Amino acid sequence: MNLAVIGHPIAHSLSPQLHEQWLRASGLFGRYEAIDAMETDLPRLFEAMQEGEWDGFNVTIPYKEAVVRYVDELDEAAKMAGAVNTVYKRDGRLVGTNTDGAGLVQALMPFTDWSGNVLVIGAGGAARGIVQALPTRQVSIVNRTVERAKELANTFGVTYTTFDEVDISRYDVIIQTTSVGMDERSTPLSLEGLRQNTVVCDIIYRPLVTPMLQEAKRRGARIVTGVAMFVGQGALSFEKWTGVKPDETIGKKLIEGLLE
Ligand code: ATR
Image 1 (cartoon, rainbow, N blue to C red):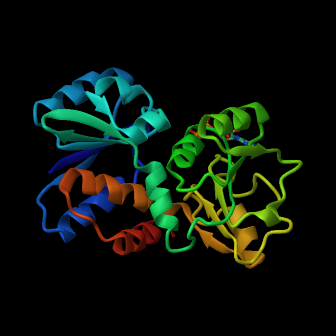
Image 2: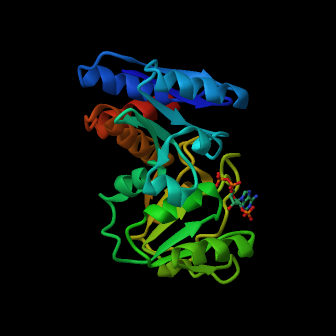
């Protein structure tokens, strides 16, 4: 298996360690490289995959939208998300898919049966990928720019609210998708009124426990760090390339160890 993640910058990507551990654990020969690419490198990389040099790619910031035009087809998840994070081969054709949203949903399965209300914070590309994958339409989107929340909500037949009006106590699952929290200080909204059995999840994993997750923990809620989504999306990609379901628990342990 010749696998790689393509992005820029890519030096801090944890995907090579995650996938190489899974390759070893599955008894598969192969490698997983990190390719720091310029946009002009993309056509050559996809040609090389077509010619058999690569079996699969992950695609990360800033190329998730740009690579749409280099694959032969997009599956439903990639179409709905408008972005590709995984490329695999099927009958000689390059297929673009998106495992980000499904990876998060899978990671949250042990915590919720999705019968309650879900709040998604943010309305950017990451939020779009997640909303399309959620197994419920009892979803509300809250975003700084209300117009974007409204647009995303309308696209997927869910509701939206505003930071001024949002009632935190109504939600069973809260998913934070913005970049707020990476600076280790800010949280996108107050968790005043948070219920103890609510599951609060942040897709950021640097820092491992964001300020919002710290506050949620103080208030007695159950927290899920961004490592869960990172490992979840990776596991679904690995399965697309190899047909093998990797062990997410060892993946999570490895990544948490590297981040601590
Ligand atoms: P991504 O693909 O990572 O989601 P994006 O499409 O640029 O990136 O979206 C960024 C998200 O973070 C948006 O929801 C954005 O809110 P706006 O739509 O109002 O811009 C949100 N965001 C970024 N910085 C923010 C901040 N300082 N406060 C609140 N929300 C912020």
